[in-house]
Amino acid sequence: MEQLMDKLKSYTDYLKEHKKIARMAAIVFIMIVAVVFFGHNEEKDEIPVQLPVENEEAGITDSDSKAKRETEIYVDISGQVKKPGVYQVTDGTRLFEVIEMAGGLTADADKDGFNQAEVVSDGEKVIIPAKGENSDSLSGSGVTTSGLININTADSTTLQEIPGVGPATADKIIAYRSENGRFASKEDIKNVSGIGDKTYEKMKDKITT
Image 1 (cartoon, helix red, strand yellow):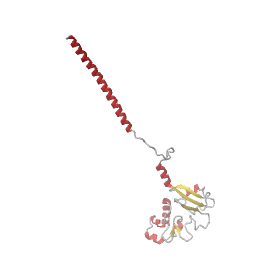
Image 2 (spheres, rainbow, N blue to C red):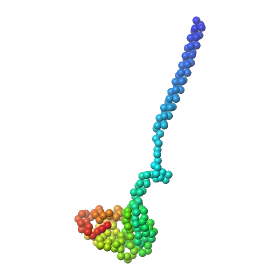
Image 3 (tube, one colour):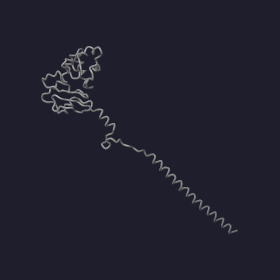
Image 4 (cartoon, rainbow, N blue to C red):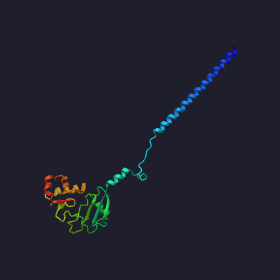
């Protein structure tokens, strides 16, 4: 009987010991599963970021390059400037800035014969007149050889020769040119405050662009 009790106690102790081992194995298994699961999720959460390829090293993106191309215009300037030629400028550039790029005015330039504050337009041909020069056909004269008044280049005095245009309206035309650039067509003069359809009908056969 005593031997039987000893065996039973040994078997019980064996079960208790293995139960601890089984419990430890289960804990280790759970830890391994947790590490694998969370590590896999962290890898999925990483979002790759791809920088724009074009001009990446210079810090210039595709959109920056496109915007730059859209604002580039070309102006041909000649006459009384030191370095006549075609110049690349940005949209909204004033005539005096183009003159500076062309080396400035010569000593013979007629500074009163054109509007230096005018906004230049793409493809524009600007001819700077000389003092006392017969400039009927020049961009800065305001009057063509056919007698039409160029609303893009005429000064205030010449603009007042247009039917329906007085000093105040002439100033508005010049201000409009300075703020918006050249008139694309003579009909665009109706964009100037105070010039409606009736006034335009009076002047349309006397003006050009």
